[in-house]
Length: 237
Image 1: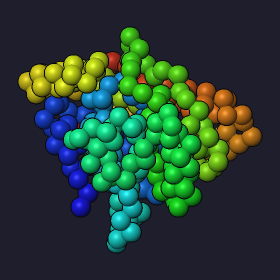
Image 2 (image 1 turned 180 degrees about the vertical axis):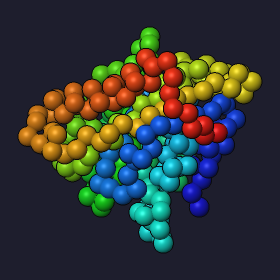
Image 3 (image 1 turned 90 degrees about the horizontal axis):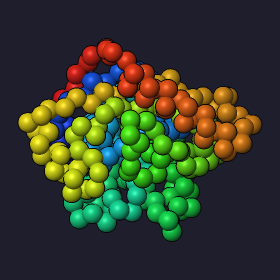
């Protein structure tokens, strides 16, 4: 039973709402990499719920009828902190998320590469941790997303949201406190999926250049949300 997507939908409905756009750019099969900006732990439910409701379930492939045509699956790379949490950890394992930490980075990268080699979709937060700039713009990306894209020759789908910090931000305690008040405030998180960065766009480039390319595309998507007066509305609770 796939729990994580359903839980994410429930939490998003509780804490606010999502306005998604560009969902047609999400693949149901891989190899493909979904790269998402990360500003707060509170941005995880809106992101996962949007993917889930689009048909891209945060779980291991089920290989049942309709898998890859009517729905797909995405395995996210998550920090060791997530797996150590007594509440979130079991959900992360149930979803087949790939654990990454200072000592497990190489292992996690290999596991993600193996998933891509099997034709799966892998999700990654290229910034590597939870923090935020003053305006919420993406911070410096780490090398993992580029190594995965180059080794697997997989397209990278840029996904950006703004501004999940309205739900809650800062430390885990502060984020949870903000989330509780958001039940009344009902903030809106805008999310957009951009045009994929195709392998031919980064073929032959150095790792650092691929990182820069992916970061630019995610940042462009984020900027189109943050700096726009209005966005096409398709509410998802």
